[in-house]
Length: 416
Ligand code: SF4
Image (cartoon, rainbow, N blue to C red; front, side):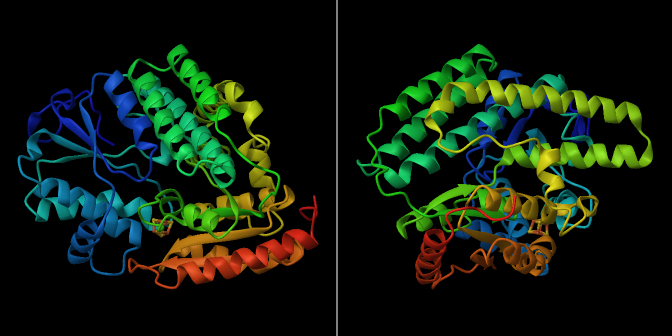
């Protein structure tokens, strides 16, 4: 990846550019807030929409996956907007190695930006190969600040998903959530640390004041699968809201666990190849991150009804009866989380995946074995190809009904 302290394309140093961050989810505040604190000018791109998809479909060959179309569309839409200056622009585009197409996004984006006349626009691409290190003039500090923002956003989302289904004033939880997001953003711009802890305390007070009625608990569904679709409410047709409207409570996978997953897979590779120094560096970073995560959770812990997750190593070990974690890709994470949450009593799983997504297809293939071990845990694969899913509401209502029946029949989660 490019070293941002040296001149980028056309000799313009990164400090003189604007970094544009695609809007996968609200975690974008973690990246922009941290970049601003480090003196890097940045902007979040607008969330993906119909225009984005049209541009992506126009420029790609059609064999790519939906997140690829959307990311291509997001970047090119920004490039084509009035006043855009490619020579002073850099796009933030994390990558990943391995068989999944994600590792090729940056390559494809480079080709397409060059072809469309935006060769001067830089692509900044930290990668999971190095645990997403190496960005900015103070890469370690920046990475840790981004990390704390991602954890804070994950915790805020956890509150949202635990409170909203039981709110007595429609819309009140969304307002508390938006306030919380603003608090996190401004705390990160001030450097995180105490400011971020104070933001978490204020968030806890906002949520504690929400009137809720939990006298009738709802069946709990895990939303898992391909990370972009799982987290992007603009791309998954507001899946969590739809599940709530159908009568469920939802627990979703998080972005923070993806970063823990990247750390663990990197350490596995280091062990395999005997790169001990690299292993020790990641181990130290990972331990620090876990303890920072635990501290940020303290102010809101009393409001959450569900426990914190074990370490990613423990989670990944749960998948071994079904899949070797060394095979990697999101398949590992989705299946491991399924086992964890099934043990913790979720009564159904929605697995979201883009059309032709290889890790998603493998998950769907292995799922019957996992489901069988948990009393035929209800399972729904939802496949997105960029068209709006017209019958999704009916399917979700039927699924939530099935999940409710399962929850009544199985009060415990399955084999431990
Ligand atoms: S996980 Fe699936 S959808 Fe996501 S980049 Fe990889 S192949 Fe595409």
